[in-house]
Image (cartoon, rainbow over all chains, first blue to last red):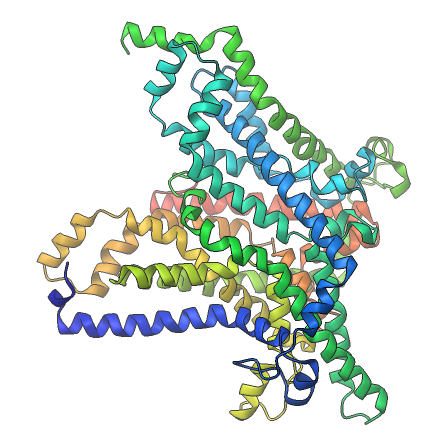
Length: 306
Length: 313
């Protein structure tokens, strides 16, 4: 259809619609923009004039430099990166292989696997059971706790893979079999290449989940060497928040220099905290445009049916 | 099935193929047993008087405790407060979020300019991929009483006389949790509905146009019934998840000042279980939660099967 074919009424409606959706976009983007500009604004300026609402007022790279020069943050970054890469690759492979077997009509004893799947989807032992199990396995406070328990992507992912693998024409499998291809070879040479979109989508979701996760650190580790980037940012944010709350609940009661110093310290905290948050989100923002076209493949559209 | 096809299918049933298939499933199956099935034995702890020093076999050997752990929970007056917070944040949140998400999906679907449509989706999906640590941290900074932009706007509009310490005000917590979740997740939430809308039979719209139906009538009488299945599934999930808060979100936003309204079941389990090491009590809360969730799931599914002829299973 050509735009000149639209009625006047339709044109008005489209303009109105675009205006509303533009506002929605502003609201969703603003928080991230706010953190970005304030992380690059000087702590002094924010202490004097409050957070900058729209643009950088007093540019400084100081907070970013503080964050990037902190060896503890670099270690947290490497821990997170290592974990994310390892889990994404291994989990994708293990889950896709499992789903392949599950999707084949010639699999015998499928009932065992569907029972396991059903149990794992609807029942959950809870954090305590994991705590005891990880302790027994020697995973508690061990880097491997970030990897081993996450190696299987769960049955929701199996369902999505399954739906995608089943949409590959059966004749392809038959002819490969006739030609003497083994199941392993069919998986790696036919199924994997044909399923690149769904594998990419679920791989991205896994990577994002691993990158953002902080509960595994909170629940099952103790030593600071094992901090992930998310956890480090969280503890920074927690201490900044308590400092800020303390300062604001005390304001007005007295004008002591301690409180002024606290307020100063907390605003310095603020820009560093914001810088840390922005930096930890950068890898996601960078990969986002490349990943976006695959997203719809990875959601349960058509996989769950009534 | 013809004879030839049958013979082809036979191809995959030989021992070598079966070994390969099961072999490929083996790593996944081991992991499920290890990390999903074995932890289920931990549920026994709810009925045990378990000490942290008892080790893994202590799950079986520690003395039975009857329903004592459950009694401890229900006699704790913090428990009803937590339950109220959990239900409040989830119920009010879902009642606002689900219709709003569907509405946004309908609006996006009406956009004619393909580029603008893609831009809206790209931008609104983005916060979903940012962690709650980051997004929650930004929310805290937005609400800061000391120069935060929201306080600045509210005071300059004279809605507030002086800056409010939102994060230290228990009564603001539910609103903060619900609104921040909407801003972060509403765009991503539309992806399922948008896909469902794309699957609605286009001929229905053409027929309605010939009959002179206006835009809103088409939405109401064609699009919404067309995506009913998706809506029902999302509602069932919402009902079943009513006792699950987003721990990642709540824990980030929670602090000592707003605890009265921010303590929910999931954060409480963490505190009782992993900080105070009262494993039996934490396991008992987990069972209480799981049983209730299962009942809710089954009844929501049954009700939807009766009312709408569609459900999860």
